[in-house]
View 1: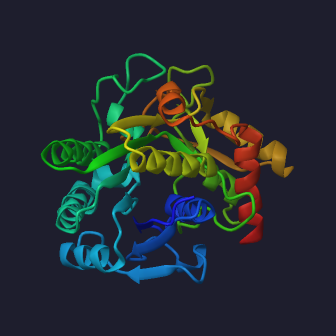
View 2 (view 1 turned 90 degrees about the horizontal axis):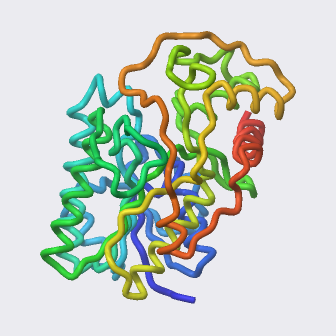
Length: 327
């Protein structure tokens, strides 16, 4: 078991907080840097080393990395709402691309040798064939996807010019909550489908919308490959272990390999909650992709990773339980 120290940017957010819990369970000493614009300090253990600051502040981050002697970084800080990126693209190039550039500069100054990046399946755009592999053409259709792909490009270039190695994990649709109730999706006015459905099921929202019912899918609604946040967290720890033990640079899809439609999510939420949801059919949203399903075989093979919470009932059930706890 390692006692190395790692800096986690955006560690007070939804995914970051789950990864912090997994890192601690695997013996890592964790330093969290978060500006708390969307993250919540209460999602983290009280005794953890926490710094309130911006991941794009190169001087701050370089000093923190050096004073804490962190040789590894996980980068979650950034903006993630796809429709918002379409209406406010420059904020996404600032919060995602520019911040990542400054963070990488700090990592170079401090001699960081391993870097895990929170990327996205949005880099693929609307793929012609499913499931998508890591060699599927990257043709993002939104500023969010482009901002993440730009950071992937920077990582390749920095790794080629230095000793730093990286793993970029391309998330598909992350959902669910920690099964011990320690963390969950807590972002106000969240847009994640399962989060919204579960909020409606416990009465936090009067209704919910389906954005587009005329897609070329079996039931007319978009299809997504959902991955439980705790399984995603374990993939991050496996990626870190890969790099620490001399593994090479990797870009890996994080998904289970099967899709579920928006209507199926709603039906499952209704069944598990025992409550009929007030659902409004709305127009398509700009930037929404019709279907997105991962080929996650490379993740399983390279990192020797396997999911533990892949059932949709587990994913939605854990999200429901989180909403009940926080009602």
